[in-house]
Length: 189
Image (cartoon, rainbow, N blue to C red; front, side, top):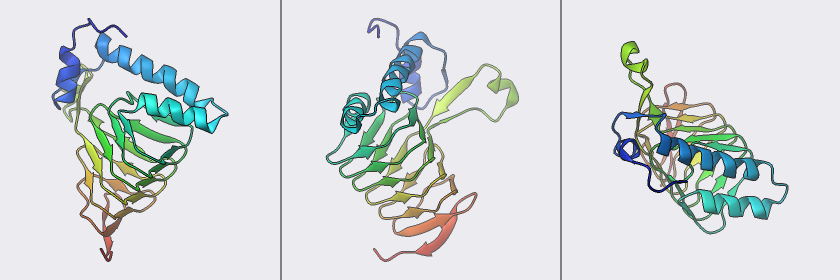
């Protein structure tokens, strides 16, 4: 990666503003993540694979396990607390920060999307993108195939049912499910 490239579009991306996704500096970050994910996803040695994730992600706490294959856009915007688990085939579009607390469990084929595009078709023609962070608090379990959209916070100890599409914040101590996800059950804190 070249550190001397202008970072105007990258700074816009991190600030949640509309940015050009084909910016050369942003592309260099994506290319680095792709190279590291290729090694991770094809490693037969689980210990080596975890070391790759520790280099790729911004933070990986103690006793975490990420199972290949994994797809992410940058990696450097992902933070995991302690004792977290990410199962197979998870997709993380991390144009904004993705933060996981402690004891978070992510089921297979979960998708975390910080990125979106304008709903106006003319604005979409220029591929402008904007990103908002996703926060997953302590002890959350996200079931297989769930989709978490940009700007969402999932409250501590909550459960996202398999296949749910989460479009807005989830309070602590609930089970949510459906599309769009709604509260199904209150849990004991």
